[in-house]
Amino acid sequence: MLSRLSPLAQRTISPRLLSNAQRTLVNISYPSPKIAVLELDRPPVNSLSLEMSAKIVESIKEIESNPEVQAMVLKSSNPKIFSAGLDITEMNRPTVARLEDFWRNIQTLFLTLYSTRLSTIASIDGHSPAGGCLLAMSCDYRIMSATPSYKIGLNETKLGIAAPYWLKDLFVTTIGYREAEVGLALGKLYSPKEALEIKLVDELVDSPVIDVALKRADEWASIPEKGRVASKVMLRGAMIQDLEEKREMDVGWFRDFIMEEGVQKGIEGYLKNLSKK
Ligand SMILES: CCCCCCCCCC/C=C/CC(=O)SCCNC(=O)CCNC(=O)[C@H](O)C(C)(C)COP(=O)(O)OP(=O)(O)OC[C@H]1O[C@@H](n2cnc3c(N)ncnc32)[C@H](O)[C@@H]1OP(=O)(O)O
Image (cartoon, rainbow, N blue to C red; front, top):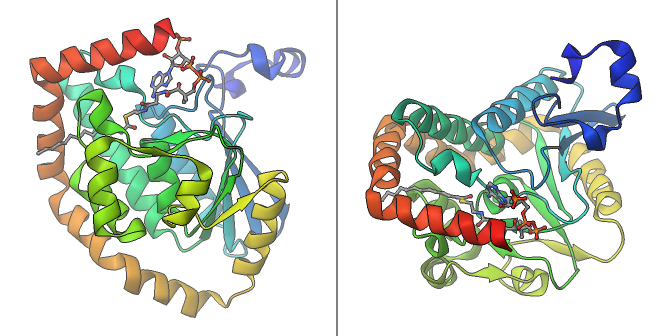
């Protein structure tokens, strides 16, 4: 943690040179009293390790605890990557105890972000595959950079794994059954233009995404909280309750699936290819 370093070291070490063990992993700022910005900051690709997901949850709770704050923008410190999704190394020959804990933290991350009373705006200025797409879909509104090379979607099948049932449900709810059926089977990653067409994102921008995200956050923050939150609960409550009831069953499915030798070989191969690239 950055806070473990001496004040002098904190001032003199460039943030770029800090290892992840020394970083805060996320940064919180408040551009105005009603708006918080939660910045993902886990180089190189903002992948979601156990510690990273726990930190995001802790930060959302910290922001929520201030009753004045109404909206939260989720962004990345990396100019080209929103989040590369789950940290694949967590699924590569793990211990059962760590793997189960990892998955409980991912469930909690989804449940916390999807159900927060805050209006959440995803400022997607870069690639957003798999768990990155999960983060974006858990928000209330998604703005993506129009840069054609960026990709967003659920590519799990390309790693030889499957999205869990609740991520599949979220995908279906967001883009509709048929598109989700094809997208999941093919592990399809969409360009920003395609993502807008299927409503995986709500808006594309050429200008810095964060500028528009802050404008939208202002608009969402101006809606009276009680009615806005009641609508959110009506729309999202059933999915949240369903996972709450099935959490341990889902941990078991995940563990048994990931620990299979064939799946392990697939993950190993995928990681090797990523590193070679
Ligand atoms: C009954 C059935 C029940 C089934 C239940 C099973 C449930 C299973 C659920 C599993 C859910 C999974 C969701 C996921 O999120 S899986 C992760 C998927 N993510 C990806 O595939 C993204 C991979 N990364 C990329 O495509 C690219 O890195 C990028 C994001 C496009 C960026 O490209 P760029 O060229 O800038 O960067 P590099 O590729 O060179 O990467 C830099 C280093 O970072 C490492 N890396 C990248 N992504 C990850 C990751 N997700 N986890 C860990 N590490 C990652 C990469 O290897 C490079 O490392 P190196 O410098 O050491 O080589």
